[in-house]
Structures are given as structure tokens and as C-alpha cells.
Image (cartoon, rainbow, N blue to C red):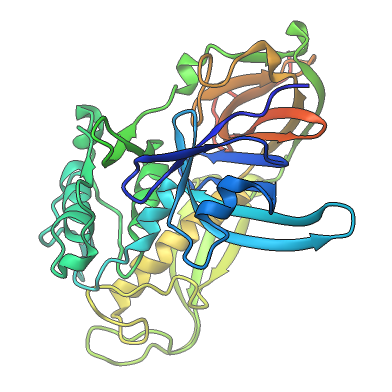
Length: 390
């Protein structure tokens, strides 16, 4: 049976407190551009658990596995006739710290004028400026200094990322995590929090391995695709018509609109039998505050902007034209060496059907039955290199 890894316990300043082994089980789930999680089960008699967590004054602690760190957030004590008292520890990766800060209403990143043009306020039009000011105002030099985290900083941002334009984003009253995730997911950038050599928090950005440079291939020809299921749709929606309920928005002059009014159409230019329209009715799900104007009081142009953003996402989901699921033998490639979270790999079946898939997570579990390790991956709905057969 594989040995369980030794977990390092860190204090709130990320100094080493102790080490844990001899636990009952451990599940460690790493995620791409999301918050990872862990679950550990220990007998209540475990001396290290009693010392730091099952006490009258439990400490804020972090668990470290290799180079990954997660914060201990929940402690559950259960009784069992067979196992006695079991302590379950649960927590989240460092990225959850970005969820601990909510941007104020006056930190609008990109707003839009009535003529549908962009206005950047004091944030600036590029990735580097937006991220720098967002983090500075919420973690480094906040108006209320109690929000600051000593040593928190941004790692040097690669030049091809730093110069990206920020047109098309509209944020207000969201957590820093939500804002950073939407920006990075839009551009295919990986982000995360880590400790630098001085044990201070560092926010980093980088491009994962892209589809055109994928060197990891899973194929029945190589014996590492065990089972697969392939499906594709011959009639995807390719046009969306956007409407709003009666009187939902006001015009610039404050007069309510009458009747259902089409906002716009988005999609391809296909015509005739190849044109397949769908309706998106704005029911308020695109409710975001714009320029400090509430949903009810937004102008017609502001309402259109918010609705358009949501409608485009709805259309993209409807335009998904393929789905490929596969059971993979991942033992031929090593996580952290041959591929990492966020990287793109190539997967195909024996008929040549397949495409690029992104590694979205990596799950590891240790228990009485041994060790289990496997990644999660998702195919791109818009992958132009997807093959429908030989």
C-alpha cells in the first residue's frame, strides 16, 4: 500500500508549526482558476489535531502538500460505534483569500457611455493597470487599513498579458476573486496565490500550455483511452434575439418603454434553412449595478450593455456542437511534470474523433484502499481543430 504523504502545518504567518501523518484519509482537490478543497479524517486521539484544532482556542492554520497550501476552515467531530470519535477537517486553497475582499461601488473597472463607448474611469484600459489597482485598493493600500494583508503583492506580470485591453468588462460590488476569474477565463490566463521566498502571499498570472503546443496525447492507438462516448449536434442554435419585459427599462429621458422591445441579435449570418434562432428574455439575471445606477434606474443603453453580456453567454452554450467523454489511463504521464492544471492536452478515440481538452482539476485521495490520482478535463465548445472522424 502507498504511504500517506506527510502534511505540513503552517500558522497564520505561514511559518511551520508541525507535521501530520497517521491520519485516516485525505482528499486533495486542486482546481484551475477556482478554489481547491481538501478533506482529512483523523481519530480524535491524534495528538497534533488536539494540539492545534480540537481545543478551546483553535488556531488559524494552513495545510501544505508539496507546494500547494490550503486553509483549514471547518472542524467536525463525529462519533462512531466502530471507529470511535472521528475528526473531519475541511478547507480551501489560498485563492479563497481573494473572495475575502469585496470591491466597493466606486471601484468600477470599465463603464459604458450612452453612445456605447468605453470609459475606464481611474482604472485604466489594460490588464496590468486594472489588476494592480484592484489589488492595491483591496489588499495593499486600502482606504480602511484593516483590510490590508502585510506583504501581499503581485508577481511580475508577463508583458503579453500585462498589455491586454480591458474593453467589454463591467464590474461593481463583486469579490476580487470574481473579477479576476472572469478576466482570466476570458483570455485563457491561469491565476493563483502562492508563497514567495519570504513567505508572503503572491498573486501570479501565466498562460498555460496552449492547444497548438499540446504535447500530451491520449488515444486508443497509444492504449491510454479506455472507454469513450462521442456526441455531436447537427442543429445548434446560431442566432439569439434579445427581448426585455414591458416597461423594464427607462430611456435617457426617464420614460418607460412600452411593450416587448428587441434589444439586438447576436450570432452567425446563416440564412434560410441553416438559420436557427432562439429567444433570450432579460428577466433581471443580468442585474449588475452600472455607474452606481441600480438595475431599475439604468438607462436604455446601460440595460442593453448588461443584457448583451449575458445573452452572448447563453448563445455560446446553445452553440455547443459536440461532447466527448473518455476514461483515461493517466499513468503514462506525470502530473506536475508532463502537464499541469490549465494545460491543454489532446484526446481522440479509435475513429479519429477528438479534440483539445483543458485540465481543469487534479484529484488525489489516500485511504485504507491506497492512493487514487486523476485529473479532470473539459473539451472546448469552440475548438476549431475538433475532428469528427478519419
